[in-house]
Image (cartoon, rainbow, N blue to C red; front, side, top):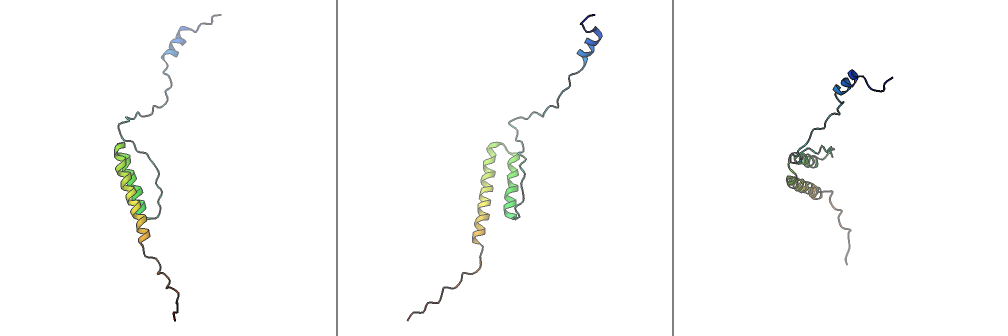
Length: 100
């Protein structure tokens, strides 16, 4: 009895292709890639518009992100400032002080 593999079987094993795992697409680090960050609606149209503006950074190189982030920050700050400027209920009248 021989421990050697018959020649036909050895050739069949050598010719069989190796199973390959699906290759991930290679990304060029110089090409912008979307961050795919999920944005949840806040219910405030001004704030939601600013959050959607963040998607513009997905298509820019890293050095272009700063401009988008500063623009969004400015818009969010303006939206918060507008909340402070909205008129509220009138202030109560001062208590009556009788002077004699």
